[in-house]
Image (tube, rainbow, N blue to C red; front, side):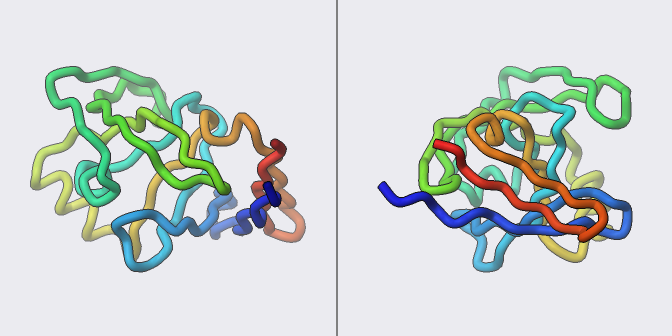
Length: 141
């Protein structure tokens, strides 16, 4: 099986590494910020989870401490995504928010954004060159 092309990205003005991903259900690539401080797969909102065809479990929630250093509560979701030539089964966290909170957050964004976490990077090489402002994610096996 041929090795898939690496995913390339860059750093934003806040020096956060990101890549553009083609995601099922979205006509345009989605900006995925890379968070190596969280062991899960993805952090997405409910709208994104539904568009990606993921099953959301509303009855069960999970608490996690992220960059805010405050416990945050998420719904769980389950499903498969296309990732570097594979379709792994993942359990992304879904942001738990009211409709007003979702609308306020969406107004602050100019494009779709998700958080890409360590679980999807386990079989990858992640290169971040801060000088060149480049990001490369390559599947290792």
